Amino acid sequence: MARKRSRYKEDRHFYCPHCQGRLWRLGSPKHYLFYQNAIELKKELNISSKKAKILNTNYPVYVDRTSWIEEFFCPNDGNLWLLVSRKADQNLSVHLPDRKDWNRTTKTILPDRPNPSVSEFTYRMSRNKNR
Image (cartoon, rainbow, N blue to C red; front, side):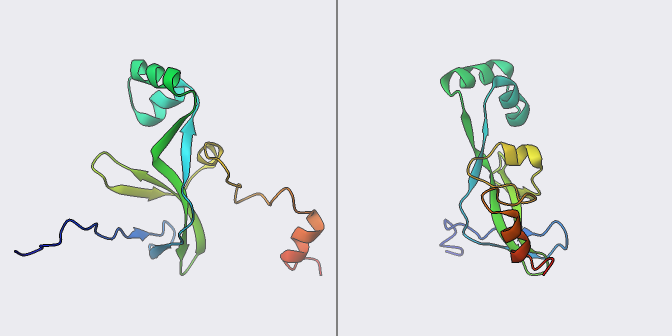
């Protein structure tokens, strides 16, 4: 009768790519990646071209539920946005997203660019620059 409650999920721990410290989830929404044509589907999902074409005809915009961008917190580095991918063996891998990953998500703002709806003056004052 050992490990009677083993059906419960085990906690998954993620580690910072910069300092190798433990990361904490912030409860932010998951921003899933999407693909719009058969070439992207074939390349990113590692499937055959025939299957990619079938998926593309059924779903003009295919949302990949196995890869998403999520916000984490590192005690040393602060808030980090990371790309989380679920592999075939149900393990999660975490790495830093690049620009093409950001462009494949919806409702996300690029972290290296300020919000376009905020004026330049307000942005500078919020950063305490040139006061």
